[in-house]
Length: 74
Image (tube, rainbow, N blue to C red; front, top):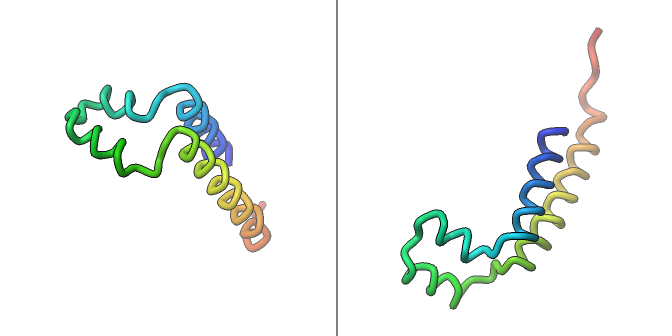
């Protein structure tokens, strides 16, 4: 759970601070491919932030629900 929390916080901070297309440039994507992604991409920084927030809350809810099926052994 701690690792999941750290991963989500890291991703949310990244999407809040770094432009997604700039991140692709730094990863070495060709400019032509980045232009295509900008033209047809649903995932802007705002959408990525919302998607990560919603999906992480759903995943966290599932983990908390599934927790009752696992017992601690001494």
